[in-house]
Image (cartoon, rainbow, N blue to C red):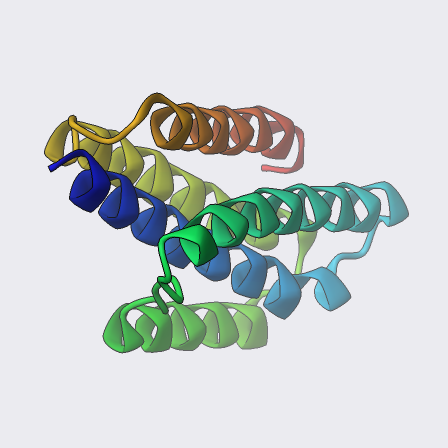
Amino acid sequence: MIEHDTIELLRECDAGIQMGISAIDEVKDHAQKADFRTMLDDYQREYAQLQNEIQGILHKYHDEGKDPNPVAKGMAWLKTNVMMAVKETDEEIANLLTDGCNMGIKSLNKYLNDYAAADERAQDITRRLIELQDRQLKELERYL
């Protein structure tokens, strides 16, 4: 049970990180302020570092990770591109990313509960990902 929950929790983190990296990638070229673009690049790097850590652990379990749900990814892409076409501002980018962070935090907390038997390392990574998204939320507030 521990191994199963550990793998599943890390797979959900992996999928969430892919969504976060993709979301930032889609909007950062639209950012108007240089400090905002820098902040987005920094978060993207932090997500990638966590993803590398997760994939290293999953590799030891002979698991490839998990791609995001294609419907969720498609809907996020559509929403982002429609909103950017209508209102291409730092405020709108911050608004879109805030929604994503809130959804990520909610989902990750649910997965911590669903996969409670996961080992401490997987739970720690999940908590660090939640903290990363929470910190990002706070930084995004100044652009709303």
